[in-house]
Amino acid sequence: MANELFIPNVGPVQPKPLAGGAESLRESKAGGPAFDKVLQDKFSPQVGSKAPTDAASGLKFSAHAMNRIRDRSINMGGEMMSRLEKAVDSAAAKGSKDSLVLTDDAAFIVSVKNKTVITVLDRNQMNGNVFTNIDSTVLA
Image 1 (spheres, rainbow, N blue to C red):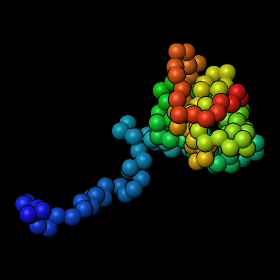
Image 2 (image 1 turned 45 degrees about the vertical axis):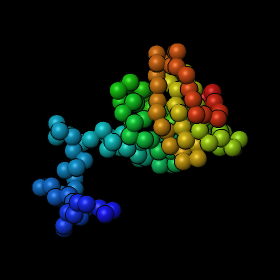
Image 3 (image 1 turned 45 degrees about the horizontal axis):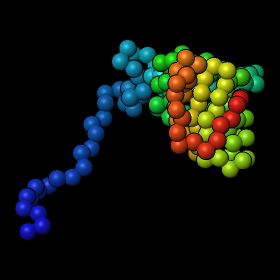
Image 4 (image 1 turned 90 degrees about the vertical axis):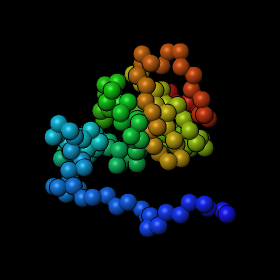
């Protein structure tokens, strides 16, 4: 009597392919490229550019962090990426696992072990916050 209910032929549901192929999944409702693609393009290497990229630094951004960057209009230019990369490398050298990286304009919670930015706050949202589950802070 472990299972009173028997449902035959139940298995995983397979997603139906979209018309237009896999590329349609990357398009926004407005028809333009999704934010993820735009962000990745922004950090992809440009010809003749010496700006660091997330691919070069190994830094990744969670979906949550990317949404916060967009919603809070945080400038993630080459200088910011360089500072963030150096801060994460410094935290890793000291054995940190989860770190708060503070810059002039933003605060980043980073999984140092995974080299992943978990969330981002701008200068206005830093005040009054309590940052938990971190084992280090880096001023960048």
